Length: 395
Image (cartoon, rainbow, N blue to C red; front, side, top):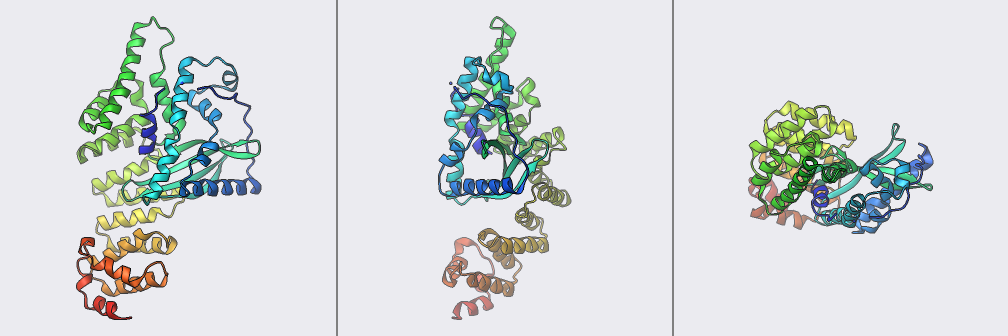
Protein backbone atom coordinates (compact mmCIF):
# COMPACT_ATOMS: atom_id res chain seq x y z
CA UNK A 1 0.00 0.00 0.00
CA UNK A 2 2.75 2.44 0.85
CA UNK A 3 4.09 2.09 -2.71
CA UNK A 4 0.87 3.52 -4.14
CA UNK A 5 0.99 6.58 -1.92
CA UNK A 6 4.70 7.10 -2.49
CA UNK A 7 3.79 7.58 -6.14
CA UNK A 8 0.63 9.61 -5.68
CA UNK A 9 2.14 11.98 -3.16
CA UNK A 10 5.54 12.57 -4.73
CA UNK A 11 5.27 13.27 -8.45
CA UNK A 12 5.49 16.75 -9.94
CA UNK A 13 2.86 17.17 -12.57
CA UNK A 14 4.42 17.28 -17.91
CA UNK A 15 3.84 13.92 -21.09
CA UNK A 16 3.63 13.07 -24.72
CA UNK A 17 2.82 9.56 -25.80
CA UNK A 18 2.24 7.37 -28.81
CA UNK A 19 -1.13 7.04 -30.42
CA UNK A 20 -3.49 4.43 -29.03
CA UNK A 21 -4.39 1.66 -31.44
CA UNK A 22 -7.57 -0.39 -31.53
CA UNK A 23 -7.39 -2.99 -28.77
CA UNK A 24 -6.85 -6.65 -29.68
CA UNK A 25 -7.95 -9.27 -27.16
CA UNK A 26 -6.02 -12.42 -26.36
CA UNK A 27 -7.83 -15.72 -26.78
CA UNK A 28 -8.13 -17.98 -23.78
CA UNK A 29 -6.18 -21.02 -24.95
CA UNK A 30 -3.27 -23.25 -23.93
CA UNK A 31 -0.74 -21.30 -25.99
CA UNK A 32 -1.59 -18.01 -24.30
CA UNK A 33 -1.77 -19.71 -20.89
CA UNK A 34 1.84 -20.74 -21.38
CA UNK A 35 2.84 -17.25 -22.53
CA UNK A 36 1.25 -15.73 -19.42
CA UNK A 37 3.00 -18.21 -17.14
CA UNK A 38 6.35 -17.43 -18.78
CA UNK A 39 5.71 -13.69 -18.60
CA UNK A 40 4.70 -13.89 -14.92
CA UNK A 41 7.78 -15.97 -14.07
CA UNK A 42 10.04 -13.47 -15.86
CA UNK A 43 8.35 -10.60 -14.01
CA UNK A 44 8.76 -12.30 -10.63
CA UNK A 45 12.40 -13.16 -11.35
CA UNK A 46 13.12 -9.57 -12.38
CA UNK A 47 12.01 -8.36 -8.95
CA UNK A 48 14.19 -10.91 -7.19
CA UNK A 49 17.09 -9.95 -9.48
CA UNK A 50 16.71 -6.31 -8.38
CA UNK A 51 15.87 -5.37 -11.98
CA UNK A 52 13.31 -2.59 -12.58
CA UNK A 53 13.79 -2.41 -16.34
CA UNK A 54 11.69 -5.51 -17.12
CA UNK A 55 8.68 -4.00 -15.35
CA UNK A 56 9.12 -0.60 -17.00
CA UNK A 57 9.85 -1.99 -20.48
CA UNK A 58 6.76 -4.18 -20.31
CA UNK A 59 4.36 -1.57 -18.95
CA UNK A 60 1.98 -0.41 -21.70
CA UNK A 61 1.68 3.29 -20.94
CA UNK A 62 -0.73 4.15 -23.76
CA UNK A 63 -3.55 1.88 -22.58
CA UNK A 64 -2.92 2.84 -18.95
CA UNK A 65 -3.19 6.56 -19.80
CA UNK A 66 -6.46 5.89 -21.61
CA UNK A 67 -7.88 4.25 -18.48
CA UNK A 68 -6.71 7.01 -16.12
CA UNK A 69 -8.18 9.81 -18.23
CA UNK A 70 -11.12 7.75 -19.48
CA UNK A 71 -10.54 8.76 -23.08
CA UNK A 72 -11.91 6.80 -26.00
CA UNK A 73 -9.70 5.68 -28.88
CA UNK A 74 -10.59 8.61 -31.12
CA UNK A 75 -9.83 11.15 -28.41
CA UNK A 76 -6.52 9.49 -27.70
CA UNK A 77 -5.62 9.60 -31.40
CA UNK A 78 -6.18 13.33 -31.61
CA UNK A 79 -3.42 15.71 -30.59
CA UNK A 80 -5.87 17.66 -28.48
CA UNK A 81 -4.94 16.66 -24.96
CA UNK A 82 -4.72 19.66 -22.70
CA UNK A 83 -1.44 20.92 -21.36
CA UNK A 84 -2.63 19.82 -17.93
CA UNK A 85 -3.25 16.24 -19.13
CA UNK A 86 0.20 16.06 -20.64
CA UNK A 87 1.96 17.51 -17.62
CA UNK A 88 0.02 15.33 -15.19
CA UNK A 89 0.94 12.09 -16.91
CA UNK A 90 4.51 13.09 -17.64
CA UNK A 91 5.01 13.87 -13.98
CA UNK A 92 3.47 10.58 -12.92
CA UNK A 93 5.35 8.42 -15.41
CA UNK A 94 8.64 10.10 -14.56
CA UNK A 95 8.17 8.77 -11.01
CA UNK A 96 6.67 5.40 -11.92
CA UNK A 97 9.99 3.58 -11.49
CA UNK A 98 9.49 4.09 -7.75
CA UNK A 99 7.01 1.20 -7.78
CA UNK A 100 9.28 -1.62 -9.03
CA UNK A 101 12.27 -0.18 -7.18
CA UNK A 102 10.41 -0.31 -3.87
CA UNK A 103 9.32 -3.90 -4.51
CA UNK A 104 12.96 -4.78 -5.22
CA UNK A 105 14.06 -3.17 -1.95
CA UNK A 106 11.35 -4.94 0.03
CA UNK A 107 12.38 -8.32 -1.36
CA UNK A 108 15.97 -7.60 -0.36
CA UNK A 109 14.67 -6.92 3.16
CA UNK A 110 12.88 -10.26 3.34
CA UNK A 111 9.45 -9.56 1.82
CA UNK A 112 7.80 -12.37 -0.16
CA UNK A 113 6.55 -11.40 -3.62
CA UNK A 114 5.34 -14.42 -5.54
CA UNK A 115 2.80 -15.48 -8.15
CA UNK A 116 -0.31 -17.03 -6.63
CA UNK A 117 -2.10 -17.85 -9.87
CA UNK A 118 -3.22 -16.54 -13.25
CA UNK A 119 -6.69 -16.42 -14.78
CA UNK A 120 -8.66 -15.19 -17.78
CA UNK A 121 -11.27 -12.51 -17.05
CA UNK A 122 -14.21 -13.37 -19.30
CA UNK A 123 -15.84 -9.91 -19.24
CA UNK A 124 -12.61 -8.04 -19.93
CA UNK A 125 -11.25 -10.73 -22.30
CA UNK A 126 -7.91 -10.21 -20.60
CA UNK A 127 -5.47 -12.36 -18.68
CA UNK A 128 -4.50 -11.52 -15.10
CA UNK A 129 -1.56 -12.42 -12.87
CA UNK A 130 -2.12 -12.44 -9.11
CA UNK A 131 0.93 -11.76 -6.93
CA UNK A 132 1.08 -12.10 -3.15
CA UNK A 133 3.12 -9.65 -1.10
CA UNK A 134 3.87 -10.53 2.51
CA UNK A 135 6.17 -9.37 5.28
CA UNK A 136 5.84 -9.46 9.06
CA UNK A 137 6.05 -5.66 9.14
CA UNK A 138 3.59 -4.78 6.37
CA UNK A 139 1.33 -7.83 6.50
CA UNK A 140 -0.49 -9.35 3.54
CA UNK A 141 -1.40 -7.68 0.25
CA UNK A 142 -2.15 -8.76 -3.32
CA UNK A 143 -1.33 -7.16 -6.66
CA UNK A 144 -3.60 -8.35 -9.47
CA UNK A 145 -1.89 -7.40 -12.74
CA UNK A 146 -4.17 -6.86 -15.74
CA UNK A 147 -2.39 -7.79 -18.98
CA UNK A 148 -2.78 -6.20 -22.39
CA UNK A 149 -2.18 -8.14 -25.61
CA UNK A 150 0.10 -6.24 -28.01
CA UNK A 151 1.38 -7.74 -31.27
CA UNK A 152 1.16 -11.27 -29.91
CA UNK A 153 2.88 -10.47 -26.60
CA UNK A 154 1.58 -9.66 -23.14
CA UNK A 155 2.26 -6.33 -21.43
CA UNK A 156 1.32 -4.91 -18.06
CA UNK A 157 -1.68 -2.62 -18.42
CA UNK A 158 -2.93 -2.00 -14.90
CA UNK A 159 -2.85 -3.37 -11.40
CA UNK A 160 -5.65 -4.04 -8.94
CA UNK A 161 -4.34 -3.47 -5.40
CA UNK A 162 -6.24 -5.38 -2.73
CA UNK A 163 -5.57 -2.91 0.06
CA UNK A 164 -7.13 -0.10 -1.99
CA UNK A 165 -9.83 -2.26 -3.55
CA UNK A 166 -9.47 -0.69 -6.97
CA UNK A 167 -7.32 -0.55 -10.06
CA UNK A 168 -4.28 1.71 -9.91
CA UNK A 169 -5.70 3.61 -12.90
CA UNK A 170 -8.84 4.34 -10.86
CA UNK A 171 -6.78 5.53 -7.90
CA UNK A 172 -4.72 7.82 -10.09
CA UNK A 173 -7.85 8.83 -12.03
CA UNK A 174 -9.44 10.03 -8.79
CA UNK A 175 -6.38 12.18 -8.09
CA UNK A 176 -6.46 13.41 -11.69
CA UNK A 177 -10.09 14.48 -11.48
CA UNK A 178 -9.50 16.04 -8.06
CA UNK A 179 -6.68 18.14 -9.55
CA UNK A 180 -8.02 18.98 -13.02
CA UNK A 181 -8.59 22.72 -13.60
CA UNK A 182 -12.16 23.95 -14.30
CA UNK A 183 -13.08 24.41 -17.98
CA UNK A 184 -14.31 27.95 -17.35
CA UNK A 185 -11.44 30.00 -15.94
CA UNK A 186 -13.90 32.77 -14.99
CA UNK A 187 -15.94 30.47 -12.75
CA UNK A 188 -14.96 31.77 -9.32
CA UNK A 189 -16.64 28.96 -7.39
CA UNK A 190 -15.04 26.25 -9.54
CA UNK A 191 -11.63 27.88 -9.20
CA UNK A 192 -12.05 28.08 -5.45
CA UNK A 193 -12.91 24.36 -5.32
CA UNK A 194 -9.87 23.60 -7.46
CA UNK A 195 -7.57 25.53 -5.18
CA UNK A 196 -9.01 23.74 -2.14
CA UNK A 197 -8.30 20.37 -3.80
CA UNK A 198 -4.73 21.28 -4.62
CA UNK A 199 -4.22 22.70 -1.14
CA UNK A 200 -5.52 19.48 0.40
CA UNK A 201 -3.15 17.23 -1.57
CA UNK A 202 -0.13 19.44 -0.90
CA UNK A 203 -0.92 19.92 2.77
CA UNK A 204 -1.78 16.25 3.34
CA UNK A 205 1.51 15.13 1.79
CA UNK A 206 3.47 17.56 3.92
CA UNK A 207 1.80 16.41 7.15
CA UNK A 208 2.36 12.72 6.38
CA UNK A 209 6.00 13.32 5.46
CA UNK A 210 6.51 15.10 8.78
CA UNK A 211 4.60 12.39 10.73
CA UNK A 212 1.98 14.88 11.90
CA UNK A 213 -0.69 12.22 11.72
CA UNK A 214 -3.34 13.81 13.93
CA UNK A 215 -3.30 16.98 11.83
CA UNK A 216 -3.42 14.88 8.64
CA UNK A 217 -6.39 12.94 10.03
CA UNK A 218 -8.24 16.15 10.88
CA UNK A 219 -7.52 17.51 7.41
CA UNK A 220 -8.84 14.46 5.57
CA UNK A 221 -11.79 14.08 7.95
CA UNK A 222 -12.93 17.64 7.19
CA UNK A 223 -12.52 17.26 3.41
CA UNK A 224 -15.69 18.05 1.46
CA UNK A 225 -16.81 17.13 -2.03
CA UNK A 226 -17.13 14.05 -4.24
CA UNK A 227 -13.70 12.68 -3.26
CA UNK A 228 -15.25 11.56 0.03
CA UNK A 229 -17.29 9.02 -1.95
CA UNK A 230 -14.20 7.31 -3.35
CA UNK A 231 -12.73 4.19 -1.84
CA UNK A 232 -9.27 5.74 -1.87
CA UNK A 233 -10.52 8.43 0.54
CA UNK A 234 -11.42 5.77 3.13
CA UNK A 235 -8.15 3.91 2.56
CA UNK A 236 -6.12 7.09 3.08
CA UNK A 237 -8.09 7.75 6.24
CA UNK A 238 -7.40 4.24 7.57
CA UNK A 239 -3.70 4.59 6.85
CA UNK A 240 -3.32 7.78 8.83
CA UNK A 241 -5.69 6.66 11.61
CA UNK A 242 -3.58 3.54 12.18
CA UNK A 243 -0.69 5.85 13.10
CA UNK A 244 -2.69 7.59 15.84
CA UNK A 245 -4.42 4.98 18.02
CA UNK A 246 -6.52 1.83 17.88
CA UNK A 247 -9.84 3.62 18.37
CA UNK A 248 -9.30 5.91 15.38
CA UNK A 249 -8.08 2.92 13.37
CA UNK A 250 -11.16 0.81 14.15
CA UNK A 251 -13.56 3.66 13.42
CA UNK A 252 -11.91 4.32 10.06
CA UNK A 253 -12.09 0.63 9.07
CA UNK A 254 -15.71 0.51 10.22
CA UNK A 255 -16.52 3.39 7.85
CA UNK A 256 -14.93 1.52 4.94
CA UNK A 257 -16.73 -1.75 5.64
CA UNK A 258 -20.09 0.00 5.93
CA UNK A 259 -19.51 2.03 2.76
CA UNK A 260 -18.36 -0.97 0.69
CA UNK A 261 -19.86 -4.01 2.45
CA UNK A 262 -19.74 -6.38 -0.53
CA UNK A 263 -16.23 -5.60 -1.77
CA UNK A 264 -14.10 -8.75 -1.37
CA UNK A 265 -10.85 -6.80 -1.20
CA UNK A 266 -11.91 -5.00 1.98
CA UNK A 267 -11.48 -8.38 3.67
CA UNK A 268 -7.84 -7.49 4.30
CA UNK A 269 -8.92 -4.50 6.35
CA UNK A 270 -11.61 -6.57 8.01
CA UNK A 271 -9.08 -9.01 9.46
CA UNK A 272 -7.52 -6.35 11.70
CA UNK A 273 -10.94 -4.91 12.48
CA UNK A 274 -12.46 -8.13 13.82
CA UNK A 275 -9.27 -9.05 15.64
CA UNK A 276 -9.44 -5.71 17.44
CA UNK A 277 -13.12 -6.41 18.19
CA UNK A 278 -12.04 -9.82 19.53
CA UNK A 279 -14.59 -11.53 17.28
CA UNK A 280 -12.96 -14.89 16.52
CA UNK A 281 -15.71 -16.34 14.32
CA UNK A 282 -15.98 -13.22 12.15
CA UNK A 283 -12.21 -13.13 11.72
CA UNK A 284 -12.08 -16.77 10.63
CA UNK A 285 -14.96 -16.23 8.20
CA UNK A 286 -13.12 -13.32 6.59
CA UNK A 287 -10.02 -15.50 6.21
CA UNK A 288 -12.19 -18.16 4.55
CA UNK A 289 -13.56 -15.52 2.16
CA UNK A 290 -10.09 -14.20 1.38
CA UNK A 291 -8.73 -17.65 0.60
CA UNK A 292 -11.72 -18.37 -1.65
CA UNK A 293 -11.33 -15.05 -3.49
CA UNK A 294 -7.59 -15.45 -4.08
CA UNK A 295 -7.26 -19.26 -4.14
CA UNK A 296 -4.16 -18.60 -2.03
CA UNK A 297 -3.45 -21.25 0.60
CA UNK A 298 -0.82 -19.00 2.20
CA UNK A 299 -3.79 -17.36 3.95
CA UNK A 300 -3.42 -20.29 6.37
CA UNK A 301 -0.34 -18.62 7.84
CA UNK A 302 -2.45 -15.57 8.72
CA UNK A 303 -5.02 -17.97 10.16
CA UNK A 304 -2.32 -19.49 12.35
CA UNK A 305 -1.23 -16.10 13.69
CA UNK A 306 -4.85 -15.13 14.32
CA UNK A 307 -5.72 -18.43 16.01
CA UNK A 308 -2.75 -18.08 18.35
CA UNK A 309 -3.80 -14.53 19.24
CA UNK A 310 -7.22 -15.92 20.20
CA UNK A 311 -5.51 -18.74 22.14
CA UNK A 312 -6.79 -21.38 19.72
CA UNK A 313 -3.56 -23.34 19.95
CA UNK A 314 -4.88 -26.36 18.07
CA UNK A 315 -5.93 -24.16 15.14
CA UNK A 316 -2.60 -22.35 15.18
CA UNK A 317 -0.64 -25.62 15.15
CA UNK A 318 -2.70 -27.01 12.28
CA UNK A 319 -2.22 -23.86 10.19
CA UNK A 320 1.52 -23.54 10.85
CA UNK A 321 2.10 -27.24 10.14
CA UNK A 322 0.33 -26.90 6.81
CA UNK A 323 2.44 -23.89 5.78
CA UNK A 324 5.66 -25.54 6.97
CA UNK A 325 4.88 -28.49 4.69
CA UNK A 326 3.63 -26.55 1.65
CA UNK A 327 6.15 -23.68 1.87
CA UNK A 328 9.35 -25.36 3.14
CA UNK A 329 11.53 -22.32 2.37
CA UNK A 330 9.33 -19.98 4.45
CA UNK A 331 10.85 -19.83 7.91
CA UNK A 332 8.01 -18.01 9.68
CA UNK A 333 5.76 -21.04 10.12
CA UNK A 334 8.51 -23.30 11.51
CA UNK A 335 9.75 -20.62 13.89
CA UNK A 336 6.22 -19.94 15.11
CA UNK A 337 5.75 -23.64 15.72
CA UNK A 338 8.91 -23.65 17.85
CA UNK A 339 7.57 -20.77 19.92
CA UNK A 340 4.09 -22.32 20.13
CA UNK A 341 5.43 -25.64 21.40
CA UNK A 342 7.65 -23.74 23.83
CA UNK A 343 4.66 -21.82 25.18
CA UNK A 344 2.71 -25.07 25.62
CA UNK A 345 5.79 -26.86 27.02
CA UNK A 346 5.47 -29.55 24.35
CA UNK A 347 9.19 -30.17 24.26
CA UNK A 348 8.99 -33.59 22.60
CA UNK A 349 7.19 -31.98 19.64
CA UNK A 350 9.88 -29.33 19.47
CA UNK A 351 12.62 -31.98 19.29
CA UNK A 352 10.78 -33.70 16.42
CA UNK A 353 10.47 -30.35 14.64
CA UNK A 354 14.13 -29.48 15.20
CA UNK A 355 15.22 -32.83 13.74
CA UNK A 356 12.97 -32.28 10.72
CA UNK A 357 14.54 -28.86 10.17
CA UNK A 358 18.02 -30.38 10.28
CA UNK A 359 17.01 -33.23 7.95
CA UNK A 360 15.81 -30.66 5.40
CA UNK A 361 19.46 -29.53 5.15
CA UNK A 362 18.31 -25.92 5.40
CA UNK A 363 19.48 -25.63 9.02
CA UNK A 364 22.56 -26.71 10.94
CA UNK A 365 22.10 -28.08 14.46
CA UNK A 366 24.57 -25.61 15.92
CA UNK A 367 22.70 -22.66 14.41
CA UNK A 368 19.41 -23.89 15.88
CA UNK A 369 20.98 -24.35 19.31
CA UNK A 370 22.50 -20.87 19.19
CA UNK A 371 19.12 -19.43 18.21
CA UNK A 372 17.20 -21.16 21.01
CA UNK A 373 19.81 -20.45 23.68
CA UNK A 374 20.05 -16.77 22.79
CA UNK A 375 18.03 -15.04 25.54
CA UNK A 376 17.11 -12.23 23.17
CA UNK A 377 14.94 -14.71 21.24
CA UNK A 378 12.80 -15.15 24.36
CA UNK A 379 12.22 -18.88 24.52
CA UNK A 380 10.63 -19.49 27.92
CA UNK A 381 10.80 -23.20 28.75
CA UNK A 382 12.74 -25.05 26.07
CA UNK A 383 16.31 -23.94 26.99
CA UNK A 384 15.89 -25.49 30.46
CA UNK A 385 14.04 -28.62 29.36
CA UNK A 386 15.88 -31.88 30.12
CA UNK A 387 14.94 -33.44 26.77
CA UNK A 388 16.32 -30.43 24.92
CA UNK A 389 19.63 -30.48 26.78
CA UNK A 390 20.03 -34.19 26.09
CA UNK A 391 19.30 -33.47 22.41
CA UNK A 392 21.97 -30.74 22.39
CA UNK A 393 24.62 -33.13 23.68
CA UNK A 394 23.71 -35.89 21.24
CA UNK A 395 25.90 -35.97 18.13
